[in-house]
Picture 1 (cartoon, rainbow, N blue to C red):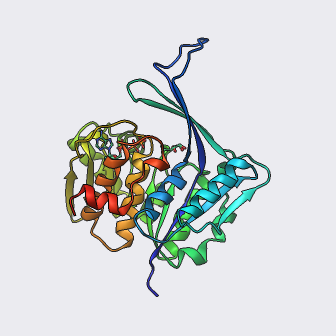
Picture 2 (picture 1 turned 90 degrees about the horizontal axis):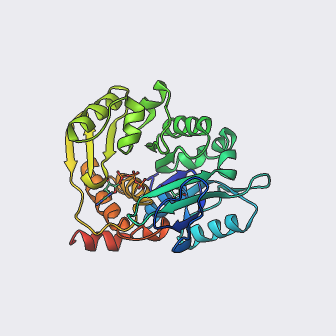
Length: 306
Ligand code: ATP
Ligand code: RIB
């Protein structure tokens, strides 16, 4: 049987975004300039990024029995994403992210996990037959860590490629690394995992080597405006960022990981996948919002002149 689907396990949030001239001081009230509601959450963003590259996508996680949850599920279905494994949690509200964006475009994000915090290792057990049919399983750290560990180990045991986006950053047990096909930290996540302060290509190489030595097959460190760095046992490469007009970087990392997974699932080389993901993420930073910023395959190919 050919494994053509990708399973994304993770969080769904409703992003409540406020634009302010500057972040208010303690006790200060400030008038914002804009308010937007976007579909977000690292898991859902990455599922959308996979699906918009034309790959069959399944999303697993939890939403609350509320309007935000209903909207989330409907939105993913509209994207053609299979939602049979999205559970409606009666005890917790849907996840919410409060995002403040200042006049310089810097963002500060506060997440209230709600139902995302109830995704359990038992939920993962039910996914094992699905994992066995998937080329890749994509996971982030916005659901409980014990559930992440169960998901990584099960996906590895079921023979799927495991792509872990270690965001938001948290330490991981050493025995998890050999189960990972690709890990995609940004600079600060790479620093938290390895202790190496990542500021440039030389320090990205050092941090990536630490992760490779722990048993990950491929390390891809995203470097924001410096693009991305990749390291495997066969060698290293750097893909510089595209020069674009940056308006909002929310979900740049999610777009990158989702697009990367889509190409790896299709059997492309790591370098081809990173070049494609780097273009997809470059488009994402030129657009506002989380899921609204994720480009389709046609948009990425046009951007790359293909
Ligand atoms: P975020 O948390 O903002 O979603 P992140 O911190 O997880 O992002 P970054 O390393 O900042 O991840 O960015 C991910 C990818 O997005 C980069 O590897 C690059 O491909 C693209 N990118 C980010 N910033 C820029 C930029 N200024 N110009 C072009 N591409 C960018
Ligand atoms: O990575 C971006 C996402 O982080 C946002 O959509 C927000 O929901 C937070 O989870």
